[in-house]
Length: 453
Image (cartoon, rainbow, N blue to C red):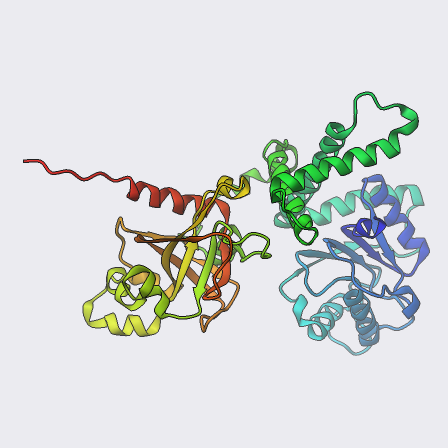
């Protein structure tokens, strides 16, 4: 249990007790928990980095050295504290020697630390924002009480310079608070009304275990196995988390940023980050194998000829119906953007979890590289999802920005008890995009035609 409670968001790196205690006290009065790392010797450096750090206050002199030696040592300590896979992190350089120029050098100690850190650990270059905060030298340092009060104001002023980070950290705080509300609500619902004060601990543990087992059964079905139970629990608790997030009073934390967040001046019509964001919004890993033909699953084919045997048309024969450019350039377009034929499962989720599905419902489609979108033909019989970063390479199709095209006339069903070996799970379309495909296809299936004179 304790292993899950070891990730505060703030760290102070400083070897001088007379200096790190005041900033720890200031953070404590602001209700902020932090790690402290002395960093002056190997025994005072953590064995592995702390995940989830968002703010690091660091001194520049952690040993008796100065200049390049001091910068190199502090950079090593920093890399031991902050993990490679991180971001964003605000690095507050809090030192008496920020503006000092060591020896015959031409840059300050602060600049030397930044360049040394990014040269030695280039993976930090697009994840850190550096700001500086004054640390007064003796004898100009105020009393401890006054200094703690000043530090609180200095910390707030320093961090106000990075409003985008503040929004993201506020969002993380909202998620944490929503998760706490989920566990508190589940505890309140699980606790028997007639339990006595003397047996709260054992009764509550047993009641919570019963509630969690019920959630797993309802999410995963009565045949849920130990291997997939935790996956089902995460899924159902995640749905509860979203419900709490939607009803949390976010205004207090995010409202101060409303003005610049709503400013549309100079915004581009399209953003380069769109495929990456869509990659998370629209797609997920294919699954853990707990459910054959999971709704939204996208399959490649082990044998390309199987596509034609299922639908009576080859993937190549579908390409002219997808192309809207000049006919003279069709062959060039076809060669440049070779699609991957796929099948997409669109069964209703409720039928799957209630055990009522007898057959998997599969639509035929093509996954194109995103560059093909410029010459893509639009028609009622074709549904096109937004471009997204496809994070999983497969069958000669590289990990790249891509989009999915589904054809209303290409539908088949297969027994849902077992996935045949000629279907290769690739990735999964998330629930809402899958529901959109299902509704689109249903509207085509329900279209009525009649003859009149």
